[in-house]
Length: 385
Image (cartoon, rainbow, N blue to C red; front, side, top):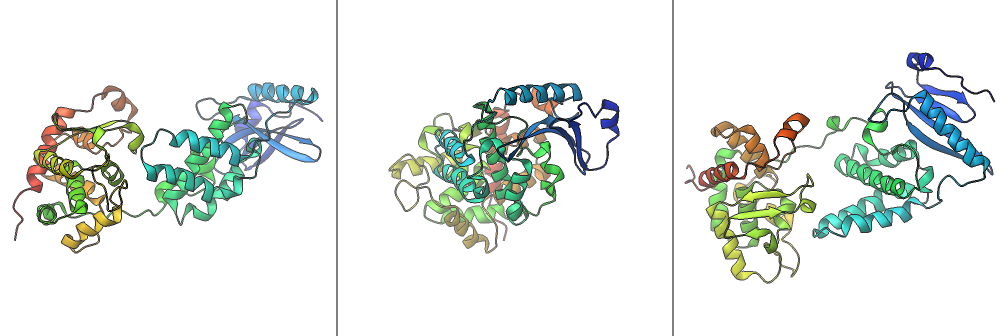
């Protein structure tokens, strides 16, 4: 079979979706969106295997025609020597190893369960496949049934599939680009994530927060205390529910959430207002274990459902616990002169601008302490009739 059918000039002119051969197993795939990627196909004992070699002219490590040919030659030489190009380890086998690694250091039982559940439930179609043979099309077919109906779960599943493939690559069990990477080709095959309907967490208008907080303070029970504390700190539900005493410095009025318990995956320090510290001291008097907000079952955190019920019993609406964060953000933006970056830091939002992120290395703790004190004062104002 002839080789070197393609040229750099010809490749740059290719705009029609399809597969173009360079000869002897090396191919260039052009997708409808314009992206181009290399792959190598070989057959052994009637079994067809496709190996991804990387994207052409894209990503952080673009593969030129010359480099693609070098990679193809290396594969041909190994095949000629009768070498196995990859292990036949299945996706399921590697998946279980990854679950152990990813959940070993997490203190959040719910997080551990979700990691395992998404892969075991929603990635079932990949379980029996040799990890070395999984293609982007396999990933697409796995995600299609839930991509629009359960977008958040689907994207988490995609990221966890990608983690399994990365684990396999690190062990030398997979070669080529990760087929579950969003920018590696999936974005041309699935609806863009920002276009999916995820809905918004319903929030209480910030003008009504003093009324709701007064009702929570008057209510008994751990659910009301957890809801009030979540509002005062503007933290996420899972962070509050999974809070343990080792994370708290009452003397320093500081709560430090470790990286493995935060959504951005980095440590988050929260300055505590006087009312927040009062709540914790009261909880400390009745504590029986590590959890600050322990539910009815010993050793288990109060449920998200119970906290939301406590909120809705007062608001008479359909608000969510996460909605407190939106209330805080609206109040801070509309009613205060605190800088935007300080407000965003209080919410533990990641800075999207890489240049800004590089310069803003500190977390503005003392500035946030003033911000959270102002928020607590607002939350404690007398409700308007």
